Amino acid sequence: NLVLTYRVTSRTLAFFISPISGALMFFSYPLLALWLHSTRAAQVAFVPLSILAFPNMLNAVMQIPLALQIASGLTKIGVWTNTIGVVLLLPMMWAGISVFGLAGAGLMWAIFNLFYYLFIPWILHQRVMLGQHHLWIWVDTIPFFLLALIVFAAFAWLSFSWDNEWKVFLSIPLGGIV
Image (tube, rainbow, N blue to C red; front, side):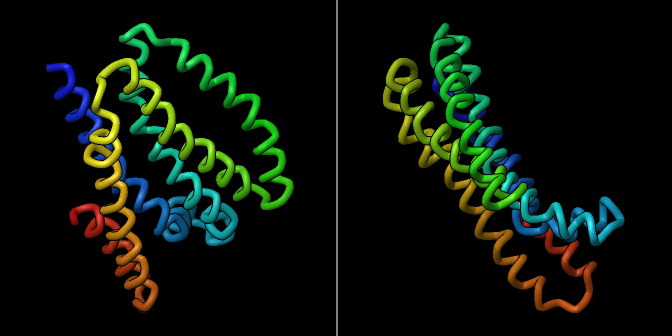
């Protein structure tokens, strides 16, 4: 059944990408400091990385509807999305960077991808997989996003009171397991 395959694939992708994004959103500073061996570089990059993890999570789950669009011959949706994206994102990025620096670019990318996530599947599901839109949003993707955000936010909140940085790193895989 095509509908079942679409929904299970969407859920599977959301299941795997959400904890990774949650870890990057809430633990970007210690992860960057460990990876780059530089607290200075981590200090500069952790806010943009924390912001960018969210829209990239949305963008990742959008690959399944994109594959459905292409397989259904609805390439116009992608062409229009990319055209509107270029027209809107260039001034949005310029404004965001001008006001907030690199974090502003991440914020603009987050806003664009939030609208992309909310509207493009809605348009697609009016043409293909009728009646699946609310299920795709509320059953197949958002529960995984929310669970990852809640769990990693809780572990981040708990880890800030810990005195040892390795305890912080232990909370990352524990959050992924939960």
